[in-house]
Amino acid sequence: MSGGASKGALRLHKGLLDIGVESHLCGNNNTLENIENLIELSFLDKVKYSINRKKNTLDLSRYNDKSDEIFSVGKDPFNCFKHINFSDYDIVNLHWVNYSINIDFIGYLKTQTKLVWTLRDMWPFTGGCHYSLDCIGYKKVCGYCPKLKSNSETDISNSLLLKKQLAFKNIQFIAISDWLKTEALSSTILNNSSIDTIYNSVDVSEFTVINDIAAIESLKKKFNIKTTKKIILTGAQDVMDTYKGPGFVREFIKLHSDEFYFIIFGQNAETLTSGLDVENIQLVGFQDEPSLAKLYNIADYFLMCSIQEGFGKTIVESLSCGTPVITLAGGAPEELILATEGGFIWDGVSKLDLSAQKSPEKLSLNAKNKFSLETIAKLYESKYVEITSG
Image (cartoon, rainbow, N blue to C red; front, top):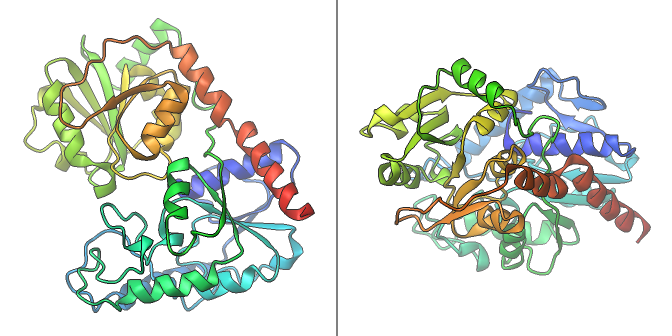
């Protein structure tokens, strides 16, 4: 349960249980949490998952110059969920399924039960990439895939798109942002599909405002933060991930290094900050959610420069802690900022004026009203009832 998609599924599961919906979650518990109604993968299933990933690598081995960005073929030889009788459930809600079940099984599964699929990235409607960046091949027929550095019209991205087009018909999709819904409806695969938008949720008991000044000063000492400047927090699981916009983060730091102190969490922060003035930068490495909640409260702003993002979980976490967010124009991050009046939109080039004041309590309340576990779970429950009674 360590990835963003799996955490999103876990939060939905908890929210459904809290409002009295009988929910069962299938996956691996990589946290220390006691997860109710968890159908955990067996040792054999984990072996299958590992083999499926290796098979995916083998399927792509012919593309010698392919990028390092994730690309999933969907031809996994083993079904990691074979032990589950899906017809026993009124609704089966898929999330991020890569390397667990293949395209053919998804096509079969929709004949066995009512199927809902939460779109957590672009993979269900592309020829294999999880985010397309500047490519719009998924709006046509794919081929000549830039991720694979392919010079063939009938490469694996083309054949996968055509296969998905048949297999993914008559499935109810839920996108985690309006941006993702719009992209899905513009695709060749899902352009005639039923798609609703229901945002991700955040555990508001974990992410909340700390108003006590003395408590904030104590937290600063804990993290060894020594500065009189205003603080900007930024980070990701891997800050050098292409989709997280590391070039934009570097540019923002360069433009604003005189005014602010920067705290960076996540992997590869040393690479990100190489060559920058480190006097105003502090690297804190990987942080779990309780520690992140403290860092959001310490910070005056949170910087999120993702260039393509299905949602933006860190945005909501920051806002729930009352900390305004700086993000780039376009896509789901801007959508979330506009929906909550939660921060500032940066053009990616100019110095940003951050003089406008934001009320921490208002930011937190707006975020919690839109993204609490209960709010999101009730929206899913309504959709489930609609599907089962239709």
